[in-house]
Amino acid sequence: MVLRSAFSVAVLFLPAACGKSVSTEPQTKASNEASEVALLIDAAPAPPTADSAISNARTAPPGWKRYENVGYSVTAPPAPPKNTDFGDSAELQGLTLAGQEFRFADCFAQVMRLHYGGSEEFDIEKGLDGGIEKMLANIGVKKTESSREPNEGRIARQYQVEGTWKGTQIQGLGRGIAADDKTVIIVNAFWQATDTTCPELGEFFVNSLAVEVK
Image (cartoon, rainbow, N blue to C red; front, side, top):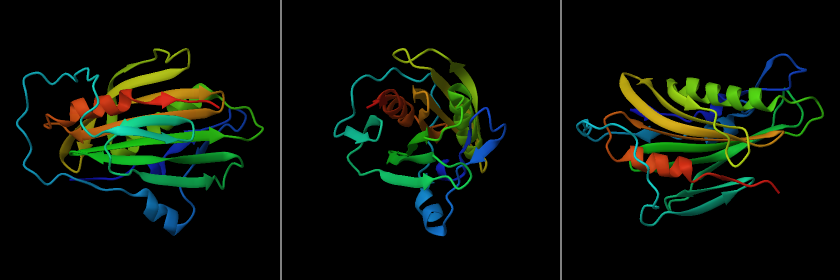
């Protein structure tokens, strides 16, 4: 199974004053190629377990370390992540999209930062929800559980997802946080539904997200 990045077609529903969605697709062939990371799951799937609930991992797996980027940090495997920087949107001046993509075990994970630096009014909740929905739609999954519990006083979303990718059942989870009134950080992790290792690793990765506003 090949699972490609949701970065390449993520869309942010932006300023309420605009009244339309804004595409954040890269504008060049080079940036398009840089945005695609494949997850290959070629091993025989592990048998499903009776308890498929995602565990509450609290201890970092051996060798994992902290990675810092603009506005956020996460704990991930030592293999360097793929940095993705799309720069300014051609459709709305001041909108930028950048992030990182990670692979561990048979999991695919990503962190995306959406920032609007323009002068128009920005609906931060619409931006957060729209960014999450478009990223999930690109992977082909839908929310099965979600909550709107704040994260350290910030507007936030937590969710679990499932869906089908080219005939293979996929599960995952994610979190979105409004870092400030014009910045959104979204983190996701996905894996094959019958995988028994990735749920715990994926949850630890997603829960390791720390938002930093300077």
